[in-house]
Amino acid sequence: MKQILKLELNEAKIMIEAAKKKSADIQVNETIAIVDDGGHLIALERMDGARITGPEIAIAKAFTAAGHKRSTHLFNTEPKGPALPGNEAYGIQLMFPGKFAIFVGGFPVVVDGEVIGGIGISGGNGEQDTAVGTAALAALKEALAPAGYTVMAEADLKF
Image 1 (cartoon, rainbow, N blue to C red):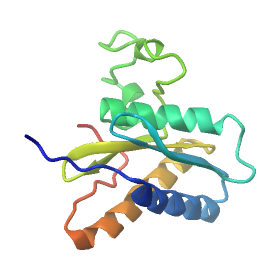
Image 2: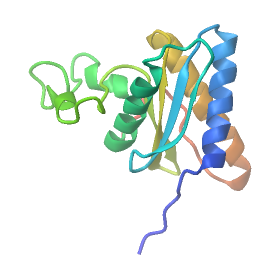
Image 3: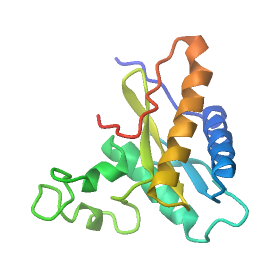
Image 4: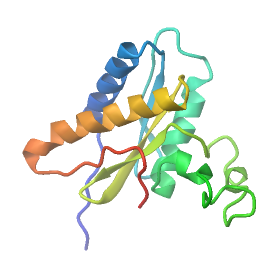
């Protein structure tokens, strides 16, 4: 029997607040989605002025990051990104139409070496979405450190 960690609403709120703060600091209106390890939505917030397409895109990014245990931009990173033409997973996004994102802005939530969820950021350019997503992960890392948990807060995550 294995004991597992579960991402819950309290942790999702910590990440969303940090993401909103970073978004405000860099002056971009983002949508932030947090999913559990099964890709099911825990929390979603669309900042005032954020694009109306943001919720669906952010959810897809979070779903992909959690489900495939990697940052979404790694699918298209040269030269071995698995979703690039000629590579092993070319066309993978077609398997889950509208739910699978292979571009920047999705990050797995990794605690003590286990993927327990995902975060998706939509609304800025790639650099902005990455800054917001990693700020959210860093806030979770800080919040869970006193309890002895280790949280990965880098942009390039793959498990």
